[in-house]
Amino acid sequence: MLSGVVVRSFMIFLIVGLPLMAARNSRLEEHVEAIERARPALYFSAAVTLLLIAGLTGIVAAWQGLPASALGWTVQEPVVGLGAGVAAAAAGLLIVWLSGRIGRWLGATESRLLRALLPRTGPERRAFLVLAGVGAVCEEYIYRGFILHVLADWTGGPWGAAAAAALSFGLAHGYQRLNGIVRSMALGFVLAVPVIWTGSLFPAVLGHFWINATIGSGGWRWLMPDVAEPADPAPNENVPGEEGESSGEDGSVEEDA
Figure 1 (tube, rainbow, N blue to C red):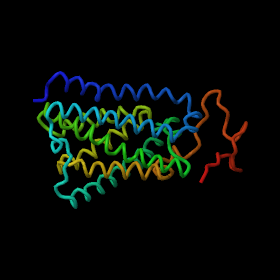
Figure 2 (cartoon, rainbow, N blue to C red):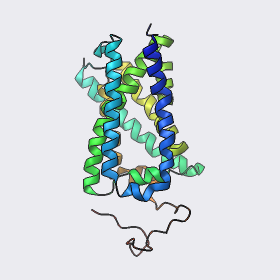
Figure 3 (cartoon, rainbow, N blue to C red):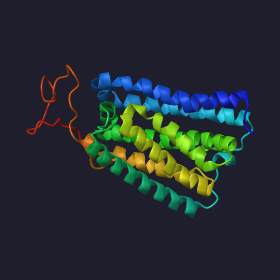
Figure 4 (spheres, rainbow, N blue to C red):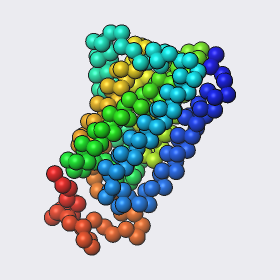
């Protein structure tokens, strides 16, 4: 059993600490205008943070003598893994599409911070694709690799561990409000299915990347209708189209190609 002080402490950091960090990030909604001007820098910062956490996870895993194959770094049947990755991506995009429509129906609007972070210009989309690749590898290793393996060892079964890891994964996206938390929880569990089935992170990494890449390449306009519409201005914030912001005839803010 993996029950050492190091593993327990690190698991508390991952399962509890990362969601708390996300909760603090939600306060950035007060600075969405600054965020919109610095998206590539924020993508870079997020990628570096994920690499550092994944690297620390790798150090703890090596310290505990966990083989890489036990954490999903193996590909036994590439064709099966590829098919599972495509299926995970399709299921994940369906979840994103459904969450957008159900959220709108329930009145659970997407966060202004999520709106501000989505790429708009060509350079921003390319930077976001880099972040999507880094995030897919690092988050899958952290959540569907290390956390899933350790929780399965503690609980004696993978499915309860997958549910607990998905809960933490969802809470780690708390800056996206309730709709984003529920959506991320569902995505986290869906991405755990091919890992449990194949014993490899390969399909989950592929699925995760394709989901994020589709959203970041402009797919959010169709998958997230609430985000595609202009956000309600925050208190004391000027309405787009006034005081220096260029707007089209319909009042929407123009975007760079």
